[in-house]
Length: 512
Image (cartoon, rainbow, N blue to C red; front, side):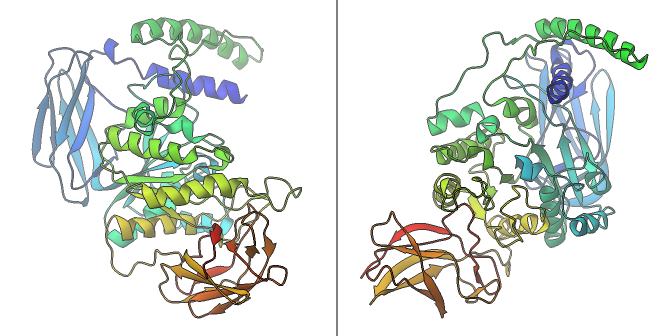
């Protein structure tokens, strides 16, 4: 049944990717009623029209004109605007006229990733769902919800999606990303202006699915070309789609009569590729003006030695296609989870590959940041943490601090700074401390380990001493390496008194 669902979703996007056969002026799916335009930058508006047909766009006192190019695509760029929560109309004129209504101006962010970003309100904690439903009248929060399970081997012209207000964002199984909603809600509350997310998610998918071709090139990653049968002609694709749709329609009519009839499912004429989500669900949104991206993905890349390079590719590619220099990419650190099902409590493959890459990306890629969530009542036997509100709010805090330079925002997690030996004990110091160290449960710091060779570690005792932690282990009288929480199931309790939990850290040398 999943394959059938993907088939019909793919047919939807295929049917929307045929601009060459259109006569009247038509718009990209994202240029629609209820949209939120990014403030402070030039905002593209685009669609398709007949060759030689001048298109006029009127909005908020601006009048912009454009002529279609050889591919019949036209685009105008509205001048930068101030944020506005007052709904306004936009008139697009050519051979026909299209009046769009209820348009706001504010902040726009992409919310992308796999299942933990994809999770909607019928899947999360009931108390959080109840809180979200209490916000359904919030007029400042919106989303462009891209339909799930769309795929293509080459970048599509358009995709299938719809703008939703707050009530629609939290309604039923077709609601939007819970993390994305809580992010937008907190950002709108803090900024006092409209905030929208572009909701682009697919559970269980690797980061490769989301990469733009441009990103592969910048990060020097090998790019797998799409299936050679891919059609680059909309007219050729239309014939294949029509043939398959006729068979599906016949089977559908039979089913309505209570009869089961096989049908000839059409092959996707636009083929498949490693970055099929980008091609079908992200590329058609560009170059819609956005501020940045929130990103919750990585479980499916556990064990990928090149995850850092792929984060570089994601950042570089999306920076290019969305025309945002060093696009803000705010990541959620993947929560601890027992991938071994209890067979290997010392496993650290998630930590060694995904966590390590996320930390390094935050240090080396402009615009990238990572937020920890391991203190949010994580169950290591459930890969889908049910509490999403804190996740969204921490992403919002990171945005408020990094992108909007808001004063007084608590958006800091203690990070390992140095370790020195005093006798048989190790003094571990941290940076990014706001108001001193403590623990989440009032107990001594947990998940500290020591080693004499940097390979074999043993559990250690730890105690707080001001803004440092004293670590010792009877079995390691002359410790040379220290680490904290560097196991896939580890949930360390060290935190800042008023802010976030401390980041875990891998094997670090101890100085004398």
